[in-house]
Image (cartoon, rainbow, N blue to C red; front, side):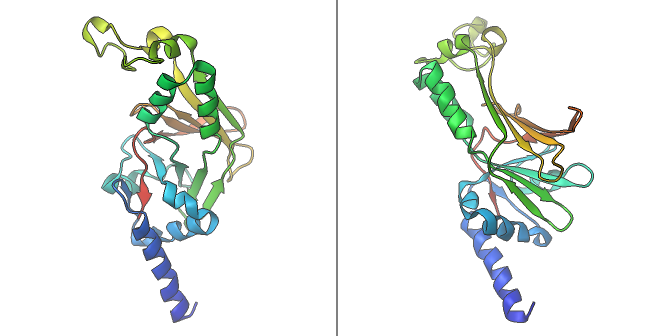
Length: 226
């Protein structure tokens, strides 16, 4: 690569990184800045939409992103295209009838894009279309939330009343599965919950064994690589 091309390459990375540096930064060290350009080459609009970062139980934004991003052997990092935050999810349940709420969530999460990033060489693999999407929403829980202001929680109100508790009324979550782009005999399984600290990602081997638990910050606002 000649000097002009080298300067042009790093200038592109700089511009892309600065363009999407919003309130929830996902900063990369200089050695990994090429990830931004590699994602842009395959899906520029993905950078604009932002990501839900995944990693160890210490994953976070800012300085808590990169040190807790890569897991497994060989080391791999996973990003999920940001779909919606928890408040947006709840709003759908509160404003739409049961079947319409389920259909809306199914449509939105069917667009979820998976980004698998190898630490060695920072190769980026993108899977745009999930193999399977399931929306779990019990009628009892939806009936409690629909056209109401009752909080979605358990025992967060006096005497545990006037609330919509999943322990009593059943759950709501979305399950998304992709073929693992690094091993087509494996699957990557993502479970979205509309509140902090509950969403997870597993790698599922060909025998159905769950591996490499990752926690996902998806009920908050999206993060942006920089």
